Image (tube, rainbow, N blue to C red; front, top):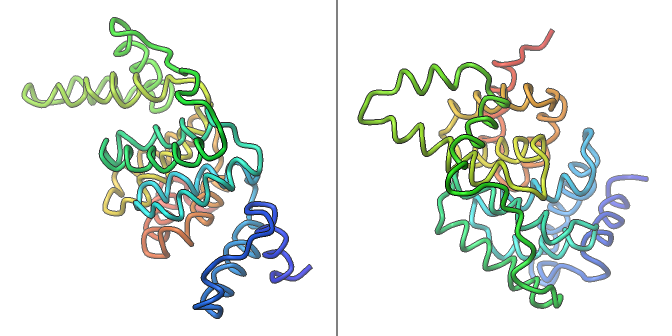
Length: 251
């Protein structure tokens, strides 16, 4: 089956029998898009369609491409992702893109859920309380990054130690500890989120190592970044791949 036939099959799987409205105005462009995304990129590497759609959702949320995000929430449900998995993927964006952009993305998700008669709010995946979010977050940080976390906290200037505390309690305590997605998935999504931001190569390097530490192999990271190309473009993808190769050199 050639890429044109593959793209038709994959598009139908994700979006049903509908045809993109762009075919009425920009058919050549839509053919290029469909054949590349759904005929090539979706078939490259070692991720399944559910993982790919989670990656698509977080990159679209990061870029605030909200109409496409809404379309892919439909696609995510069509291929069997649960409302919890979709919400948790979007929530995972908050420490990296901020609350306003995450709220924009959540609003799109909620519109789709309402159209599908999915009851809101969905079940809570909270796993921490006020008195243990720092400790539980710190434990996840250490699981991902190792002894470097203690050195970062000890080495922070007094007027910046609160930043390290926020990282442990907010980023990792409030989000990474939640149910719905496992640690390997959250860390892979984080790599895609910060890669899509651009200009965060220091953090990309750290999360490449973090992905490796939690069991995501180099090939998995390459596949995840490859899948992100249509949504964040080649420059940011190539920058992120450079980080992957820097942390995990080719033999």
